[in-house]
Image (cartoon, rainbow, N blue to C red):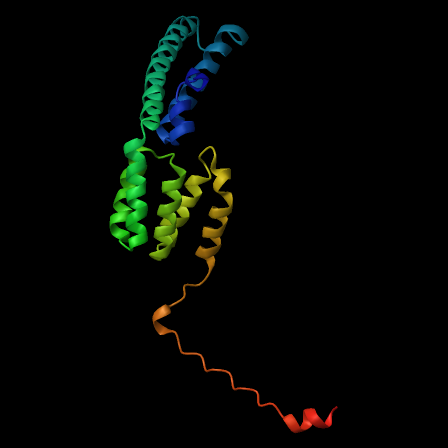
Length: 195
């Protein structure tokens, strides 16, 4: 909940939104200007600037805290109410194992739209994209995983997927039959004379 104390930080930290970065930087700039013009250089922006800046900062902070807290609580409630979401992931996994990649892709996309921090769904989607030879989207999913808290649990799998992405694709349709090795004839006479 402490993440809600700085305007823009929840959206930046949890969702990676650029708009949240702009809000956080704008608030920091305004706060620094208000501090500098109030305490360090009172003549910097004139005597009226601090009188306007501090109430504006307080209002922005309260509004941002209220909005961030509300969004944070709703996100947590949505993530904790996951029996349907788990069913969606299981269904996507089942479709993937049946070879129905398009259906699995749709289900995983729906799951990630609802819960973008779901590492298991993101890893399965990256695997599916890699198998469909869509290496850039697969790499994007793996990079996104590394920005989500708890990704270290899946570090080994992420590294394996990245390694598979760098290997040249194998065309199983053009496999040439390998010639069978020639049987080695045993020479019983030489074996008998060597005794």
